[in-house]
Length: 297
Image: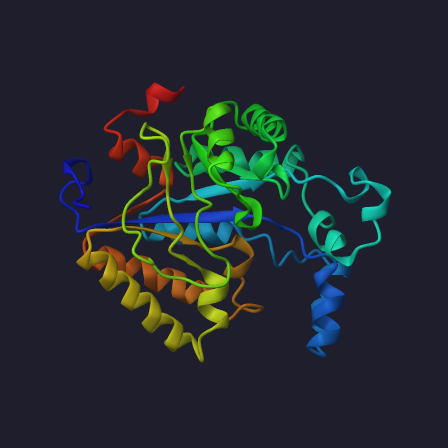
């Protein structure tokens, strides 16, 4: 792929994305207190501390770096909306409890604050919605009511997809792109340097290049993780690529997740030093399609 003139002759593109899965530390507190033998994890249960609420931290960092990103908000079903037989599975307690309500006034406020500041708000399709167009349509409608405008794209929770049906569902409810295509256990381009057009039209797929958890968890150190990031940036530069990265907001808490914020900041600084275009998927879509935001209002 050769980046066209809409990228102002930048060497490659870096799309920044954040899946907003959890904003409150709930059952994780006693779990980490036991597994790490560190009772300090319990503070969030008895104080006003909110270690997973990192919106202000992310906004301040990206403002400092003069970039914007995509935030995908989740409207997950609750545990007791599932059939009774599902209530007793530990996996379902992990999936369906401790989430936020998309219509909670504080969440509404942060969504609108992000939007006013130039960040993209997108849809984070719930766990089982990848093959449920009606559920996706409902979640998109609720999010757009909160946002008071339409959304352009999003990503499925846990990267769940059934292809090409999931993409067809996205297109059928009015989304113009999906960013779910990738892995939650590995990272890299795997030969995918461009967006995908599964229907040969204006519906685009942004392959996910790297998620923070497999990057950091598979590295021997923060510096080793950074070397992998630097390698991927060089590969993107070599191939004029569109590189997409995912950092969940809670990992910006350096006290609990040392190195995650540092790598994210270094990634952006280094990409800009290499003359990359850096921004949200929404703006990348507009540039690729040579269109304007008003076309989607």
